[in-house]
Image (cartoon, rainbow, N blue to C red; front, side, top):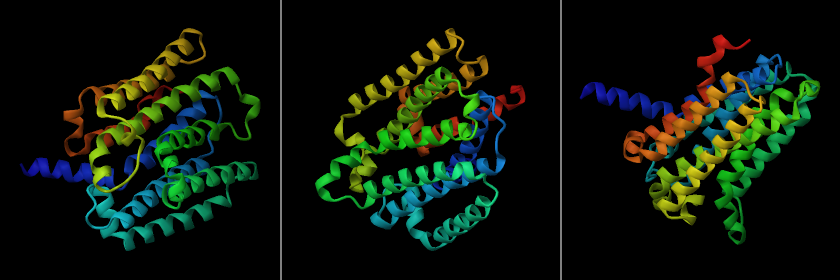
Length: 286
């Protein structure tokens, strides 16, 4: 029993503080750099990882502060109870980002500004939107999936446009977008009751559980079809096929076995874990 509580505590800590988000963004950036045959910028990779962690943490913090100590989810309640400490972490992260910016080539400045505007737009829609346009909050998963896909897939190509294979890029972008979208829909699927109790609006509230699961299957299915077509037409390598297929199968298992993955929020752990899958194939990358 003690071992189980230890396991649960570790899982809660990883989920609550977005540990796998930071690790996954770093490994995914390096993976996409390799797919496009581009030498990675490790300062940029670190900045991307830290930025994503700050965004996720700030998102959870704002949710936690708006809901209070009565929050249904552990991560929101924890962010509320420890908000002063978490604010210090976020500020420390921002200071580190400012320091890293001095080592980032100027070619990235406009692109980073573009990502910042998209991120700011997300927060404005999610937290400061007039009630007249509340329906836009239901599009959160669609918008966030797009921003994450742009951040991971497009970033390695900035300043390396000569290496661009447009057909390959289109295949990878679509595959990864629907992986991200399906993953976010899975999170909304499992969080549906808690979000409803906390009066948080997500796309999950537009559909019943059965319809939402069909949407998730549809997203995973589209991603799988594009993956197979891209691989057959030699636009994707065997390693990229293996990584993307592993991500898709993980999401499929989470959706097919909700009882197992709902327990102690396993769905969130494994949903975040898929972005770290490239770590397994790093020894085989050229």
